[in-house]
Image (cartoon, rainbow, N blue to C red; front, side, top):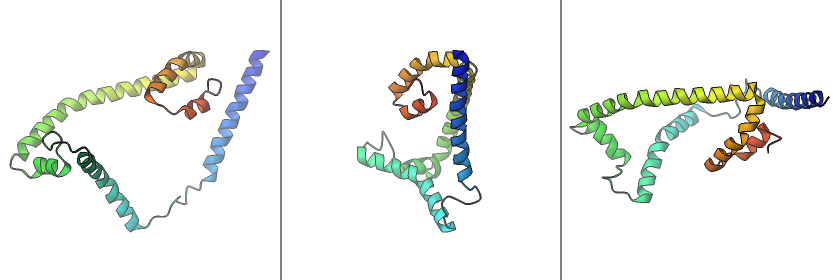
Length: 159
């Protein structure tokens, strides 16, 4: 009889969670934007997003005062790759290095994605195994400084 009670309790929790997600999705009107931004505002956001990494790069170098030989700034790097007389050779070396690195990075990405998919599928198909692995995952998450509120929401009995 306890199996039926546990299944009923789990079904009730699942239905409550599904209702919360459904209500949240229904409340937002997809035809209306959450924030109205003018075309000039969108252009400014796009420019800001494009230049922000370069500004942060420059600011980090200015704050740390690293030697330009060790860490050249964005303007010096741009000049070296696109403007200087040796820029063609520099680009050729960079393309060759990218050709060597990209396949290895792609293999790692696909492998990690496949492992994450298998673990996610396994946690749905074998919840007992998921609960058994939870302490190991929490230990790894603690080392990486993960979000603990998410765990309490996903695993209410473990949190």
